[in-house]
Amino acid sequence: MKITVADNSGVCFGVRRALSLLGDAVAEAKKNGTKVAMLGPIIHNPRVIAHYAAEGVEVTDIDSIQEKSCVVIRSHGITKAEQAKLGSISGITLVDTTCPYVQRIHQLVEKRSAEGFAVLIMGDREHSEVKGITSRISGDFFVIHPTEFDSKSGELSDFIKNHEKIFAVAQTTSRPANYEYLLKKSRKTAAELPGHRFLAVETICTATLKRQDSAGELAKKVGSMVVIGGKNSSNTSKLFQVVSEKNKNSFWVESPADFTESDIETLKNSESVGITAGASTPDDQIAEMKLFLESLND
Image (tube, rainbow, N blue to C red):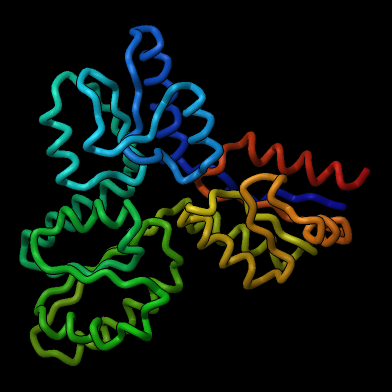
């Protein structure tokens, strides 16, 4: 079995930065005898969260933060209300690991909505990143997920028709093809309305683009494909969609323990296996998977 790891697999710049900041915070807390808490899981990788839980770092919500503790803001960002509440808690030390790409969207929607633009967002309205984005919009906004393009087509059209100025962004982990489709559809509606302005900006993370492209190319060349990442990870979900469209023998797992006996038989019968991993998957988890697959050759 030939095993190939796709280029651009695993942790992106934002996640690497977040984990580095968290590691520094934990080390400093140990020296000072203080407590570290994550305001929401720093990344969507249950194994990483479990590792830090063993180090005494708990995932908490805004109402459970203790005074004089160290609070780590997750990489997906927080809402404006949560940010304001943090400022009212006495003596806490804040470590903000919000991804710079997410921070950029916060700034963009805040600026454009203040200028009178209604904001169109492609993404998952229940995801912490999108909640943080919408909290910074002062006017009207509309969130649509790619799975809703057909069912909410009428609502989208009405939203565009009811606002003379529209500004569009996408969740950072989105699939580019979906965003392009939404923009084409929305621009067509806006173009039919005299005096309407439709502006859009590219907000999909460049690391996401490269990861999806590399994984998609590899998936076409191998017998089976393994995608590593948390089942609660948005970017890993999109990555698996890309891979599984190009290779029917695709598996999404958090660790080797997730494979079924049937999965392992399929892998053993593959002359070549590709590996890719979501942005929340550390290098050691990729190395662990590679070692496991190599052991199937024995």
